Image (cartoon, rainbow, N blue to C red; front, side, top):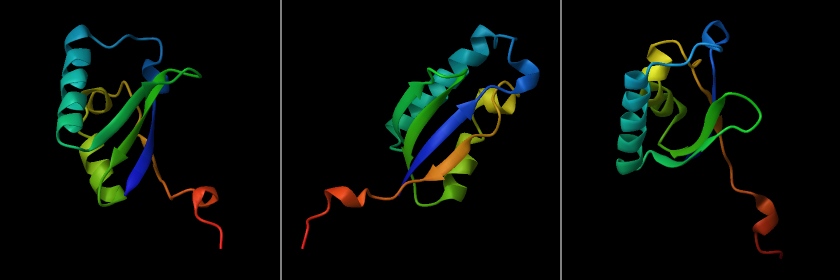
Length: 96
């Protein structure tokens, strides 16, 4: 099952840049999620600070458990992510 993930900066730290070592740890964790098949795509948000991603997992609980291990979430620079389950778009289905 696929999920859209929205990451947002925590309001208390919105103006505070994350330390370089914490950002590097975040990049490493995201790379490991990609290698393991969880992360399919990742994008920086153009409307606000944060990012969005497409992930693939068996359940919302699995996604939450894994994403909450991200260093920027654990350190409070990002809020816990919004996890949105995705369904196939029916407009591409064959017409009967």
